Image (cartoon, rainbow, N blue to C red):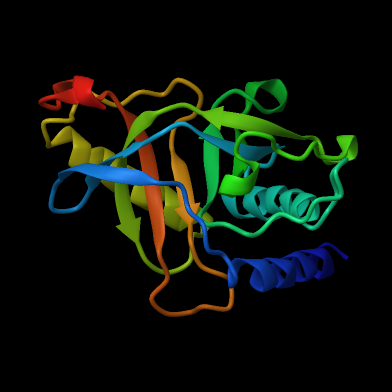
Amino acid sequence: MARVSITVISLLCLLVLCGASESPQYEVVHVESDFEIRHYRDATWMSAVANDLSFQKATLFGFHRLFQFIQGANLNYSRVAMTSPVVTSLVPGAGPLHSSAYVVRFYLPAKFQDSPPTPLPELNLRPYTWDSHFVAVRKFSGFATDDAVVKEAASLATSLSLSPWANSTTTADYTYSIAQYDPPFRFFSRLNEVWVDVDASILPGKASF
C-alpha cells in the first residue's frame, strides 16, 4: 500500500513540476570553482514539516501536502501555480525525541507573496517568511537520493573550509537545504543544489545589500 501511495505522489509531482515557472529572485555575489554565493531577498514560502529519517520520503510526503494546498485545499479555494525549486531543509532536533526532521518549502508566486491563501488545518502547513539571506550553493546532477544529498552537502562543507568562507556558515534554523528543480520523469540534465546559509560580512560593500 505504501508503495502505491508513493507512486501516486510521484505522478502528482510529475504533473506539476513540469509546469513550474516562477522562482525566487537572487543575485550572485561571489563565485568559486565549485560553489557560488547568492543573495536572496525576503520571500514568502509555504512549509510542511516532515518527521522522517529519510530525506527522500520526507520530501515526497511533505510535497504531497503542499500539492493539495496548491490544488485548492485552502480556505480561499485558490489554485496556486507551481514554482521551482522545491526546497527541503534539514532541521536538527525538530523531530520526535530530538531527532532530525525536514521542512519542505514551496515558493509562493508573486501573486500570493503578500497574502498567501490559508491552508486547510488538516494539512498542517504554515507560511514561512524567509528573510533576506546569503547562501553558499553547490550544484549537482542526477537524483537527490538520501546518499547523494549527504555526499554533496559534505563536499560543499569541504569546499567552504578551504575558501575564505571557512568560518562563515550559519545554522539558525536548519543545517542545510536541498533545492530540486526538475520533475521525476527527467532522467538526464537534472539540476539540484545544496544550500548553506553564510554570513556575508566578509564581502566588500556588503552594507549595500
